[in-house]
Image 1 (cartoon, each protein chain N blue to C red):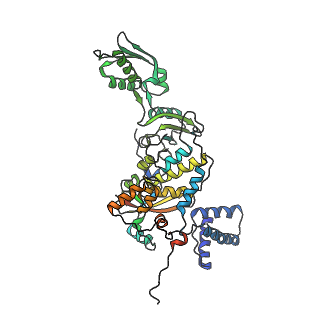
Image 2: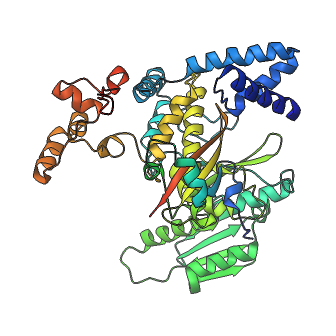
Image 3: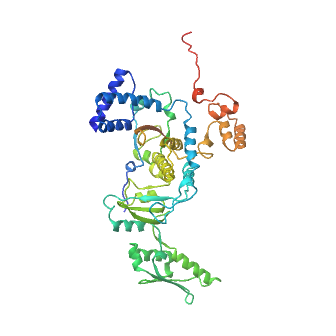
Length: 393
Length: 79
């Protein structure tokens, strides 16, 4: 394959020389050419002709200077958006785990929401552990949130002695791969001297007996005891363990930084669907890629196909300032340099007022400004002007 | 339990390199825009931090592109 690629590159250089062209194909074209050279069993003359024909098609497919790519992208994403359902489906193959899909998710992506409705992570494991069920289950319980309530065998409120009596279930603890000692320590840390642990029996006595609402407060104490978190990473709720070709953990909630620093986690493939979090942990370029991936996934799940170039343009604009910015009033559109363009979008009065207070100047370089004042717009044929050549009078 | 993690190895992160003066003058000598108008990357960006970029540096970013195979782009480091 490498030889053929070099051969094609050499031939392109030769054609450039003899035909006086400037062919510069992207890598994917060279790859495709090489593939077809093999599968179609082309001769060198045929390959030469193919390259020249491809050059013509490539030039035709190029976007002309002055083309309104942003408008085309907006229309190309917007039209399929009207066909999206407002329903939330369940995660394919996994019961229970809900993920925002369809139009609400697409809006979430382009709005660059910091708090998304259903953050979720896909956690992969390194080669060493990816088939090790025991390890995966242990880690899943370290990541996922468990409370005392999940490991109870019996639970009583004793109004006579004013105590919360609980019996822990060793079977459930073993199932969750939790450590009994650690649980005891967590209970003692939370309830201090009120705690009495005797084997599986845990008793929390009620100390504030001088209160007027002792029964209510005893019940509150019981709730507090049952909701005591005994394992899990911040911001992560339930976890779902799934096996395809390897073990994968899906989570409700997301904490990329913490999870990535854990032993045995695949630091290459583990991701989250929270774009802001990716931006913070993996940088702006990763956020850009994530916007593209998430938007494309959302659209294709609904059976819609939008050319990825439109989505790439949106992602480029959203990340061009080094931080993830939304499309719309609080992001791109709200920060245009032209007063008239901003006023034409939303909150007209506010923008005109502020501009007049500060004495802003509009250079009339954009599209909207020029439409407003009735001039030709700098787009397509309007984007070129005529200049006098001063040298040759 | 904690393990070191190389941010550039993550599948979402493309290759970032700091360009030398020479590379910058070669790359931007024949373009009709100022390289200061390039897309930006914060100096606090995790990747920029990990390769030790300083404000004013230009990073060459080699993305794997769905449409072009490989695509090279640039970002200027800013505060």
